[in-house]
Image (cartoon, rainbow over all chains, first blue to last red):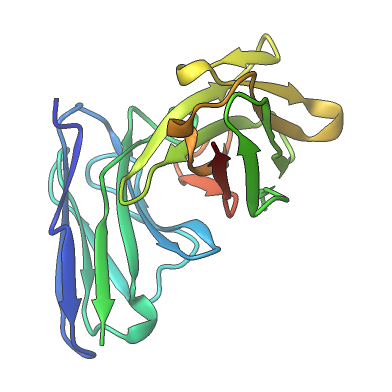
Length: 113
Length: 114
């Protein structure tokens, strides 16, 4: 079982470049999430999608956009990358909402120079 | 707003010794509580969860956690640690009715001494 798959695993960008991080889940989950992990900060929610067709801002949405392409896929876009967005990005999914356990991908390590 | 505090940034334990990782939460209603483990370079794996009922919950890999409402705590325990338990541990709280993600603590880094 693949679970939650994130691509790419690593990426280096220059300041001002754009990029889309991809996430797909094969568990038929309704809710999907994007987090960023920074040293000493734990994980912080960027955006979430409660169900197909809906997206909402989390704690740290500035500089990001998302698209819930279908029930399986939830992408995160950096329109103009900044060094402050250097981080490890995790996608997660749950059956429905934050009452249910979330299943995480292995992360995308993004460096912005 | 909900919050989670993990007071210990690093903990060092000898192999075979017992372990307790602390977690305190702030949430107005009944919390949905989780412990996750992260090995280096990996994603997060769910260890256990608490929704309601018995306040002592069992998880995978021999871990357990106890929910204490009066202390707003959800501490993780293991009777005897193994070298493979070395990892980062995160406590998280979910809201009762929403789909707005989990609020995580900053994590506790567990080091196992031989």
